[in-house]
Amino acid sequence: MTAQAQPVLPEDATAPVAVEDTHATTEAAHGGEHESGGLPQFEFQHWFGQIVYLVFLFVVLYFLIARVFAPRMRRVFDERASTISTAIETARQVQAEAAGQAEAAKREVEEARAASRATAAAAKARVTEEANARAAVEEASVAARIAEAETAIAATRDAAMSNVATIASDTAAAIVERLTGKAPTGAEAAAAVKGAA
Image (cartoon, rainbow, N blue to C red; front, side):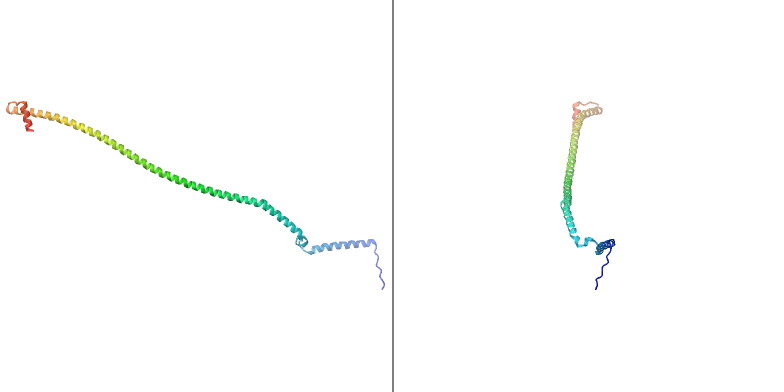
């Protein structure tokens, strides 16, 4: 067999072919990447970087939560619990004070009622005593007047009785003189009146 001679191409004819081959190789490589599949984060060669990035983010978030957010939330919860417990304790104290004040007011009302009853009873007793004293004074005054009147009546009666005897004796003497024409003596007339009485 005879070797065939290869055709020799001029230099400017081979250059476009080489450029075309290089361009075809680049397109094939890019096309292979585009055809190989979807998202680059699902490819195994990218997982190490993603895992490192996720671990870094986790550590940063953990420290932020542990050092900043959790203490703040804990302080807020503690302040809230403290405020609630203080408010409950204050409400209990106020309720106890109100109950004590109500009990004290009730005692004061009972004491005031008892004092008013005692005052009313004392006033009634004083008024009764004053009325009794006035009645006794008036009664004594009336008794004194009655005694004076009785004394005056007795004196008047005695005076009248003594005058009656005189009048009777004069009358008897006048009657005897009229009947007999002779006037009796005063002693005889008085003796006759006393004998008739």
